[in-house]
Image 1 (cartoon, protein in one colour):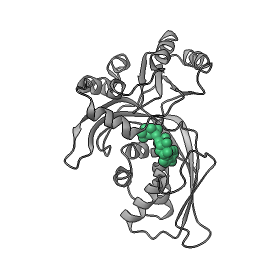
Image 2 (tube, rainbow, N blue to C red):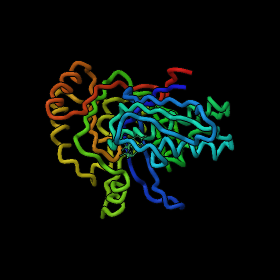
Image 3 (cartoon, protein in one colour):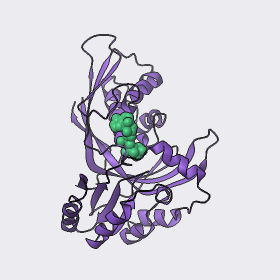
Image 4 (cartoon, rainbow, N blue to C red):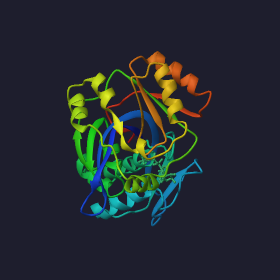
Length: 291
Ligand code: ATP
């Protein structure tokens, strides 16, 4: 079975504190965009093959360090389905260590496929509960569209879709480790928190102008991305309504109500950056390509 798994951007990202189990309590408003990895899951030809991962991208781990591998383990553990041996093939298109939930999208793709292949037929929200054990962005990557995700990422409320705009992604040539970004949040003397009420009001009323005003990401206060002001400046020059870092970075995105301006801005940014993509918001996380 083959699926496309979408990247996400954060329209809002805040860290509210610490949960009783020690994890961070998150407030994330997410949007899926059509920058996708392809994930294929098949039964292995030989028995007792365990879980194997194939990918042409040398930077992607092929063992239990791969979050897609962890998702498969979590699936078999939670459902008690017996693993007869599975093969996972991942084609990367989503930039890595970018703040776009690339690994989480792959994990979500694997969970979706296994749920179909093994006929466990868990509702998406149940599957998302399994995903939550693997990573905070996995539940959203499964559900997709536009949503508020709280707590460890698994408390999800769908929101009205973001429409009629282009999303320009620009990843500077550096990676950010999510773990170290959270350490920076923990050690920061003070964090200026986001205006959640106004943002939810904007989302609920599809008020694009207010959304662009209130969109915010606390990681911009602690994660240093030297090229961020430069990228934002160019995006603004070309008419972006909003420029913000996604996740713990370093990807900066711009929202454009005019698609041609987004394309023109992308061409400009490509002079300096390798990873620049013009995307559209999409209403799903996983799309089945082949059953
Ligand atoms: P998030 O926004 O969820 O924090 P990210 O975009 O910042 O995600 P990823 O691309 O998911 O980060 O991966 C970060 C690191 O995780 C990579 O450098 C890689 O070593 C490891 N990794 C594990 N599984 C995967 C995967 N399936 N695809 C890409 N990287 C993976």
